[in-house]
Image (tube, rainbow over all chains, first blue to last red; front, side, top):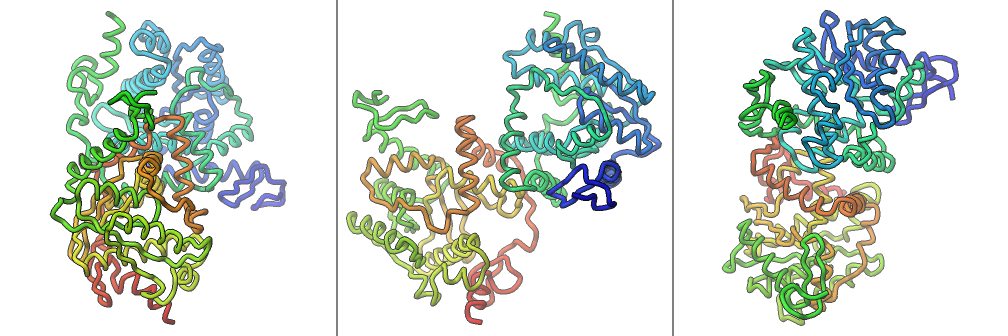
Length: 305
Length: 305
């Protein structure tokens, strides 16, 4: 099969777009598409300092690569969760550091064990029940740390490498539960608010496979293992289910997500309880919906007991 | 296994309710649960004349049986679609007639071929494309006919035998497409409006299996074949998918639907375009969202051409 834009052999065939492209034109296409998404959703500008949260995986490292190539001023942030199983955290940090070094890009590292006295799995063990809870403790800590870091180091924008498969799995879970709060907040870009940096997901329209191809064609080395704690996660279950639907009815994932955004734009309204409004945490000052101290401070309090 | 309420052998074991019951107590339980649903959603009263739309299948005949046993004044309406494949329409009419005769209950019959000059499959063939369209043409005709009949014969309430599996499959499809109009109208009861009878689905909380058990234990004879046109329908695809989710995560179906109702009650709001408001059709007088004549009249017009 030939590239649609030149005579070279196609490296990637995207059947849902009816588009086969050679290596160079595929990379160009990904860059153009990302730039269009950044513009369309007014995510950020070239004048802003951007923080890219990198996990060492294909999506976040590809995002950093793309932003760098598009001429954005994007620095990396790696959060070391302290996962010892399969040497997961050390290995993924090495991939992030290698990527940064090769391109002479600045990479910040937060070590959770240093910040909180315990690693994420240890905190989960001490404060929550069951392996499933590791994912929610981890999410809470990462959100807290990346926001705090961006505020303290004057990054007005945080970007993450969430792809379409990630976003659709989250949307699917939130829809099965009709979680008004989560549904009202799920979006490609969350505007800044007092105490909160703007958050953007420039890769949200790309399938996971497309990002794997991008990383491969750009020779980006990344950690292939999944997080050892993610095996039982609901999001993995939803992803498998959605892959099956996509297989039977191609295009369902993208249309499910885009129709959701369109419906919200057309006045699909999720009433948020007053209890979900944000106020500053009386202990750490970060914004929280909690009537008392924020979830992070309460978790740290339980750790001290 | 023993019945939870007496010493007899249990006939039905409902694992999701952790409840095993003998024949008599299962029937009693279904009757009590249905009465509670009718009361909770203010569906109708014992003073009202109720029309039960019966297809000859287990759900609608069970509904008629339940309403009769609960002391409601419920008459049947069978719509003969004229489906010749597998002698489907004749057979299902016989089941409805047998049921009515055995209980000396009045059954009205509408013959679509007499009303519209053509059977439903013929109308679909003449006015729409592809086998899939038979389902939407059939739905349109049934909704039109049952409403017209109820208005002309002074039945303020129409009931249908939709069970939980039916409702959840519809909700799932409407959610995948984020169809604001359909989502805003989907409910256990649709209040009456000018030109519209009230519509209620008293079985919406029962799984399909529970209705099959009810019909079996009451020796209700019903048509076992599925409609020959339903094989490719989306609803069947969604039902299979939802059965898989229910198998992996028991209780998902019921919670997906109940959480949806709760979210709507809590201010989950679906903005309906002005174009979706109802006005009387200038040709037949029945309510329609169309700016000109209603879909039914337009379909009949295409038939005449």
